Length: 286
Image 1: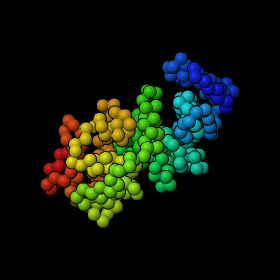
Image 2: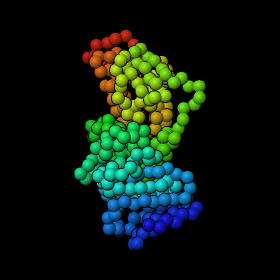
Image 3: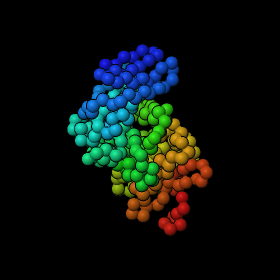
Image 4: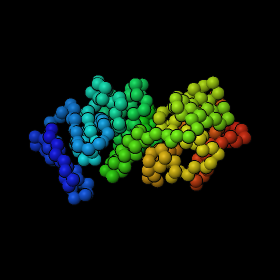
């Protein structure tokens, strides 16, 4: 594969295909008939970018993603299935993993779970044609940081990529309290651990970030837009329910064993972490 790159045009040239991804300042993608399957494509572009791994079994989608990401200045490695993606060490330590759910043999959920056992910090963006909330819950519970339903706009994909990469590089400002306590919940930013009483909570990266944001700002009510911007780096589409899914997961994990609810919904506004009088579980409406 040979790559040419200048300010006006970026193309990936192969033996019989050209992908035009940026011309005259606008984003364009031209897909010619796909090439014979290749087990791995490594695309390198000039400029400072992140190392991104794409795992997608649909070759036309995989090559389109590679072309678009290379045009954005990233270094891209792609795999057509989970077995090949997990055979080496490319996933570990990547700046971002873009992972299709419907992979052959080993599903995207399984790939994500395996990755999380060895690297709990690398951002994972899952792509799927499944719209059901249960599928989104399974993906987020497997350790994904974000979830994008096909078909999607390229601008939305790139916005999420930029946000996840930016967050993975981010640092907490000096002077911020490193340990916060609310009731019997303790959240330690340095070691990225949370405990409820004597029980350690098993949290994904996004779950921990959300819990830290809420508890460290207690008892301030945080608007949904602020939470989206802080956690994902952009305000998600109003039809997205990723935030609700993560809040539900946090409540389930923090309330195991009958623990008092600490994360509350403020209807029409957002969420807040605070101690409120105990209520029977059957009366909890938010």
